[in-house]
Image (tube, rainbow, N blue to C red):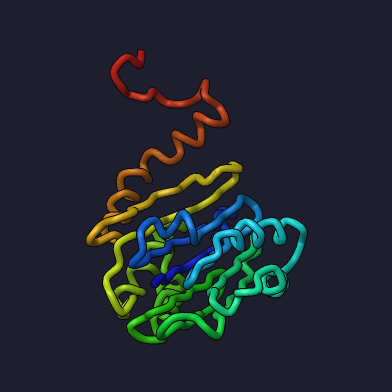
Length: 223
């Protein structure tokens, strides 16, 4: 019911993921990021607890493949899951359980991974990898292009209704957390949200770390 992509930018240290699904509020259950640590994706018949566990294990120094093994030991129902782990060096690992739904596949590339289930065809994840690897610019833009490429390659067998873009940079909190939680064209809506948020993103980071240097809020009552 989901296809997703995770990526790392070595130039900025940013980590993030983009995800879409036929289910509502996909990002809240399936996508996890931590600054300087990595990205964890847990989908198919989802166990959200595996996301925070993956980030905790990455902080302890485990590699992505070692994290997958530990997740399998922690979840007796792991064969229902589809998992992806990306660390802060761009290393990746993916897993699809024997009971993953419908056509399912994963792909890994340079500083990126992609995966999906109930897909129109098994080439969707590789199409996302190709788009990410051939793109340039802001990590958010590259992730969005990859998600759009997955949709263009066939996407899910049925329609998608929710999508999200989740990213970290130097701050300990996600610098991008945009979601279309129920929309007829959620990937289009996600791109629209990014277009609105991108010009404001740095201002929010500045306000958190150095409010005296922050630009005016530009709202009624702000002098």
